[in-house]
Amino acid sequence: MRQSPIDIRLRSLWLVISLLSVLAASMPVLTGSDDPPAPRLQRITFTDAKSATRTIESRVLLKAQDGGLLLEGRDGRLWNVTPKQLQNHEATEQPFQPLSAEQLGEQLVREVAELGIKSPAHVIVTKHFVICSSAGPVYAEWAGSLFERLHDAFYAYWKDAGLELRESPFPLAAVVLKNRTEFAEFATKHDRPDAAQAPGYFSEPTNRIILFDLTAGPKSTPAKTAGDIRRKLEASSFNVATMIHEATHQLAFNSGLHTRYADNPRWLTEGMAMFFEVPDLDSRSGWKTIGRVNSPRLKDFRETTRSPRESLADLIRSDDSFLNADRSRAAYASSWALTFFLLKTQRDETVAYLKKIQSKPRLVADAPEDRIREFEAAFGELDAVERDWRKWIGRQVK
Image (cartoon, rainbow, N blue to C red; front, side, top):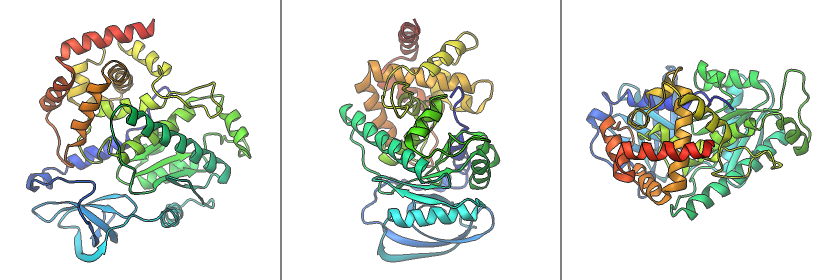
């Protein structure tokens, strides 16, 4: 996986932040807690971005003084509703409850059909994930097993690091399409056309992983066993890394490591996903370890730090380089290298920094100088950190 997936999640975040002049400017001081006390079910009717009328059952995460709402549906999807879009707001006495795994599976099947996917969809339910797949049950079960191994390893790693995470209140949703053609069709309608160019992505607004059967080629037959899947994926272990990368994003945003629609530094969210994605060619699944040297990212880092390179200050103060085609490869590589360095040499300080980031409110954008100040408060003066970081990473290269 030489290039990271298309930045669907970041583009969605920028879209939300662009609404700040309308929403956040009139926002009162609210905690925006993921778990507000005794949330009640709200039935909201509004006109969506495609001018369709929707009624959803949700809880209100934020309410602006002008009446704008940030909603979280029972499926975990986030909705921004402006006063002009809002048609009716019914507050009920019923408690807000996420959909059950079975209910979410039924909803995902409807979504896949409504977006024009002709192949029949199957639902696989694991302990923490609901996988709706047109790729067939064998691949879906294999993907579910991979996701569950990641889930357990993810939580174990952070527990050992001294960072307690919560379990997601929602079943974690994944849509696995039959092939790239179906993926492109679904991604274009589910998100936007540029999403179709990715090998997979995590959709921050909908809280879903969108993938396709990586063993499916134009002339290949579907895998019939888990052994078939492993053999087909051996040609490119980075296919598995793509799946782990996107599932790590989903776990991070549902465990409290990150907060959706908060101003999470991009170097941090991508660095974490790359820290966990490392492929393992000696494993039967193609992945099993956390925190090893990520050789493809290290190679990219070495090749992109010659000139011009991504400075630490540039990486910390802004996410702009991730949206620049000429700089994105260096930004991703530097994000992995920085995260790897910090977790290997200053894990306690990194955990403290993560706790600071966790407290950020939704829909509030940090100024560049605030990002720099928070980083230096956790790790020290920027020039010194960059000097130590590049020297340490240089030893990994050798």
